[in-house]
Structures are given as C-alpha cells and as structure tokens.
Image (cartoon, rainbow, N blue to C red):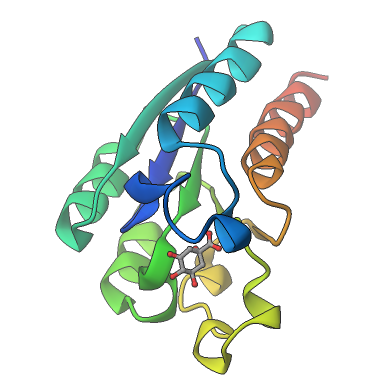
Length: 148
Ligand code: DQA
C-alpha cells in the first residue's frame, strides 16, 4: 500500500496551546488523526512522527528511503537553521513537501529564508492546517498520474 510520512519538528507537539492566533487551535493529535483518515479514504497509509530533536528527524528521513511516496514535513524553527536536515533530504530519493501553518514571509525576517525549500518538491506556507492536507493530496494525485 502507498504510504506517506507526516513529520513534525520542534514545538509542534504544542499545537493548539502554542500561540493559537498564529498556529491555530487544532492539536497535533487531532491533526494526525484527521490526516490519517483523509489518506485512508484514498486507500493510502500515513505514518506520523514528531520530535523536538534534529537528529531524530534526520534518522526518520534516512529511514524513509524505499518506504514512502512522500514526506509532509513541518520542520518548525529548523527550517531557518538546519544544514543537517537539508543534507538529509538531499540524501534520499523521497520527495518532501515543506509545510508551514503560518505565512513565514509575513513574519520576522529570520523566517523568510528556508534552508530546506531548495531541496524540497514544494512548499506550502500560511494556509494553516489545510496545508498538510493539500500536501497529502498533491502526493496522492501525483501518484495517480503516474499510473495513467
Ligand atoms: C512554522 C514556522 C516556523 O518559523 C516556526 O519556527 C515554527 C512553525 C509554521 O508552521 O508556521 O515552529 O514552521
């Protein structure tokens, strides 16, 4: 069965409690459940993983090779700092869509640069939790086209 990986980085375990005016009221658990149900409707599977630790996120990316059709990744603050995560994404053949709940380009200038976006398939920023669903949809539709 086709699988996707939902990867959330630091502080995203605080979703729902953390700055709800910026990141929304949905909890990570609810998001994970809703996204799982969404992909299951299309007979896909979703694995979920969240970590506040850069190395654990890197390990997940390495382990994704050959296992997933795509990774939906909100790298949190590491987006703007992590050469190591960028190198991890470059080291595998699994496409990654970078997702941000907030519109990072409307915020502080240090959030305007993503070190990861240049090695990702694409980026969705500012659409709230909907961005995760759109990323999943993009991967699933891309795969349908491959079968044509
Ligand atoms: C974020 C944006 C980042 O700048 C921030 O550090 C986060 C969340 C977002 O989802 O909007 O932790 O990735």
